[in-house]
Length: 102
Image 1 (cartoon, one colour):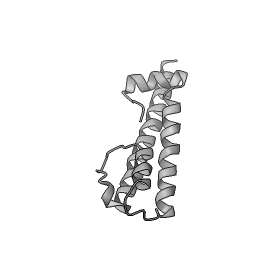
Image 2 (cartoon, helix red, strand yellow):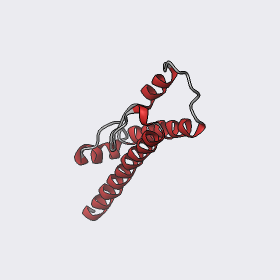
Image 3 (cartoon, one colour):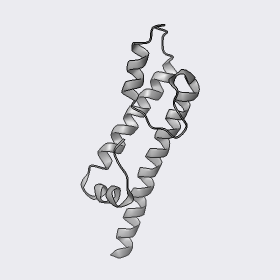
């Protein structure tokens, strides 16, 4: 029984870490594509705020489709991660592992 609990803990922890790593990689790609955003490596920011800054930019340049796809991936990954750490057995692993909502 203890082995099954440990295996569950390690599997969920690995899944949560992969989602965080993917989030950081997507932000790094977005930061490389748009250096004016000032995204630092390993930083997590709100994709909605980035979209708002693009919409209110004075130069009103069109945003490339690749950047919009990255924003979409960021939003989906954030939603999946936050939904996962709110569910019953997974929230225990998140609390023990020190994972917080993005």
